[in-house]
Image (cartoon, rainbow, N blue to C red; front, side, top):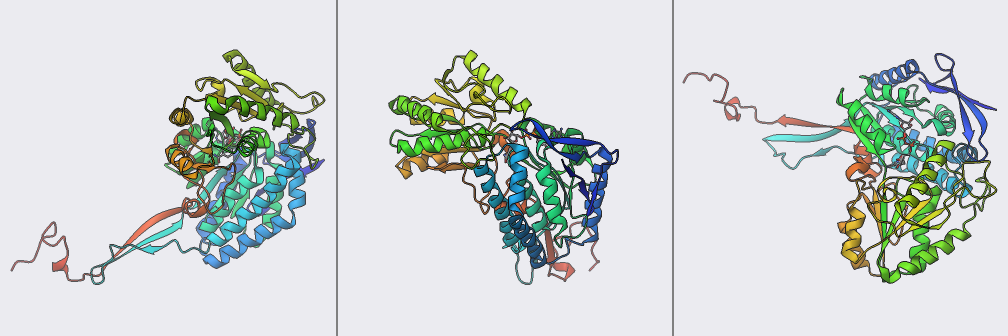
Length: 498
Ligand code: NAD
């Protein structure tokens, strides 16, 4: 049995009341690790460590080059340890070998990208400056202590999407992974501990909502960076309001792909299957709705059914497995309930719909395809976060855009077409933070990522993502030293008599 302690102020500790939690492998429901479970007292200690580290200037006062070098050191250590990290991520999350291999690279890449972005001078002189009149500087300073709360679907990537920009900006951080996937985060703590990062700059704790709530309300915290469900995002926004914290929220989605009549159907169907079923649909940007007109509808549904029949359900450790388990028993139950809801609502079940035969030992759900879905149905409006794709018929191109936008979410969208101009025209009309043309799931660490509407507030990644960890200060240096030439002369200050 593996054992893990929480990481506070450069020390690995048991929790203050010695409580522990289990790490469960969703492949067979076995317990493979025991972890210290943080208490509210531990959370306060972690925040205090981050506050002290920030206020001491031990990290924020380092030069951009020094910060960049340490972040790169962490990136390289992640690469060196990627085989172990990958194994742990597969065990705790049910991620397939193929998906988790990608995750390791993308975690390394996110750290490397922010090591580069850390070198950027974000300060600038504003155009309103006028020699002899005034100098106006826009200065970006680290926002301070960051509470970062993340979900279970891309455990290490999500951790690095928070840690790397926070460090690049000069902040200190307390990170809480999801309870389901805390093992890889605490393994990452060991990597960070072996780097030259000063003590207390990164702290990694465990636990659930109680711990998260303390992280969001603690007055010593300056910013909350949250990735998770829209439901919890709303609670966080409310709780952070009491102390008016800077907040970034990366939330859920119900993204739609539109296949135009002129699309290459082989590409569009493969791409839409990837959009909807990659990592069992447990992706915030999953393409969980698919829209097209009657002209290609039946052919697309037939091709999708054939594609799903070829997907290999298996042990996530096997290199050729396409579909592994979902994250937990609780989540399996939730996804299966949504499938029942879809049937009751009158959608046509084309493929899947249950637990695959021979995989009852784990938290498996068959890849499931619904056709003839009305966009008002719950399976088209609510985030299922499972391997369930809803196919919706549109009257024409404008109707497809209308349906795609008829959702509370606005995280991503996509268009499949051979005509780039036509596709770009649709992309411009989709109310979503990321839109792909003839692609899906492809994110670039140098490009901003985030949601419209109830999919979030703010952006991660790229320079936008780095700036999200800064406060903006305007410094005005007045160069007019003759008081009689000041704009306020004769306004409020009593003037000399002639
Ligand atoms: P979740 O919202 O249930 O939990 C996310 C995190 O919040 C966990 O660490 C959890 O312990 C913590 N938490 C729960 N209640 C809290 C509270 N009251 N105060 C503070 N923290 C609290 O989400 P999940 O089930 O772990 O992940 C799935 C969700 O994450 C999906 O909705 C998905 O769309 C979303 N997600 C979004 C993005 C994005 O970038 N937009 C990326 C990945 C996942």
